[in-house]
Length: 116
Figure 1 (cartoon, rainbow, N blue to C red):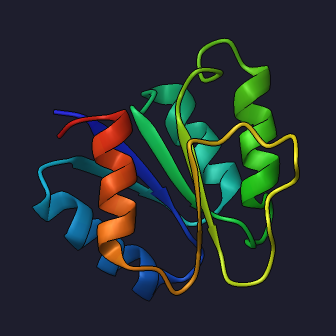
Figure 2: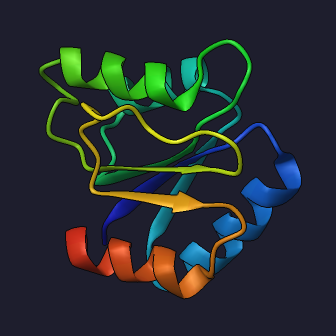
């Protein structure tokens, strides 16, 4: 079973995504910001990370950069989601979704990179 790490500082969005992704057969872990996500990922690397861009402490883009610098996490596929910002041109992502997005779009990306 593939593990997905969901990262968002909006607890309601995080819980909704956790439920939907879990129902699709994935093992789900959560974090409220990039700092917690990095700690969680280093302790037990996920198969995919889905992160909001705008969060306190460490945003999604900074999380992506930290993951790419770390041997243990450098190859973990990452999807960023945001209502306001676009990823930088050099972002190493498997997907980017603009909020609000259809859950089917997210699940399509997950199925492409990690089967449940």
